[in-house]
Image 1 (cartoon, one colour):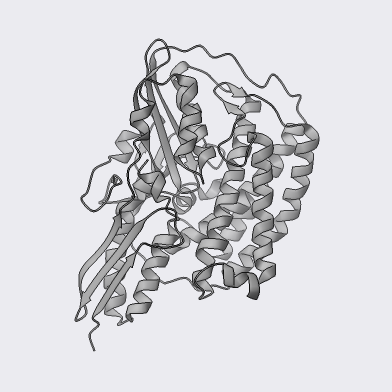
Image 2: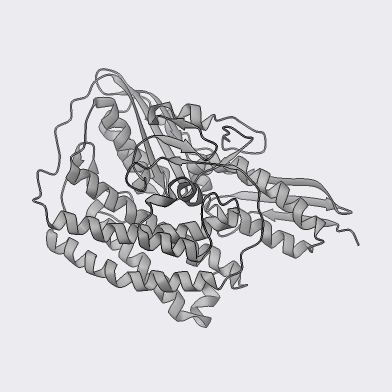
Length: 424
């Protein structure tokens, strides 16, 4: 019997923001599969015009509550690149440590609280508090540690106050860093148990070949700045990001879409891993191989596992970085800033993919042009094309309405979209 199916998810739950899924299958033939973004645009770029350079990181951090640290760091990097400021090695390490802890807390939030309920066949994490309290406590323990380190380095758990253009307003003490290093070592066992848990889940067997875009690592798995690369062989400089993003407008979305060599591309943990696998910490690479996750992997559901691999990577690398900071003499936390006319671009890998901020300044340091390109907006077209092919794939297999609806929801959640951010 040929399948006739109607899926109307309005709005999708367990993602940030508002998006809808519509699927129509008639007698086994796909008539429509549609991913809609219906969130109201917020126009951050417009109200940055005329603002002075030191306001940009404070304002841009408010674009997102989940990756506020990433937005702040991308904004700072754009200002520093425009003014010709090179951060000190101490500042680079502290910024990367702060960035790593945002990645850890965000990935753990997504894996345990947003993705895992689908595999446990429950509607949210709340039933798991009763049925699997040890697992939920483990997630809370890892996330608390990441939040505490963000608090220590950035001054707050989100919307950091100590990170500024030129450095930091205040440095953490070495005793604080020593305590966080010891807690990171303890949490590695929790991450191994997290891998054991996710290894017990069965991922949907769905493949659609696409292009993956990320920063290109140079001696280190990339998170802050550097060249851009795609799995189709495209390479660009950071300041040429617009040749990589190619934004355009579609009727079904209040967010822009992007494309490069194909009709869509993907950014995020799986893209970073596909482009920089050999630069992962050895512990993370071992976890990745235990999932059979190697480049180039084209199963979008594997983004969940790539996030888990990155959680191990950032925790392990943070232990090493704290040891290096403890062995060094702290220097002045900030350097002087002299505004000048120019254009600066900052590219930062936030949990959901590569984020760009670009500002043009006049000679008094006021913003005269601004452009922000968000990871989720770069993923929307890929989600749309995945959704179409997934619906056709499972319609041919005769899967039932409820199965296709769940697989479609899981597909979108696997991208960990931040929809409000994408309509900044």
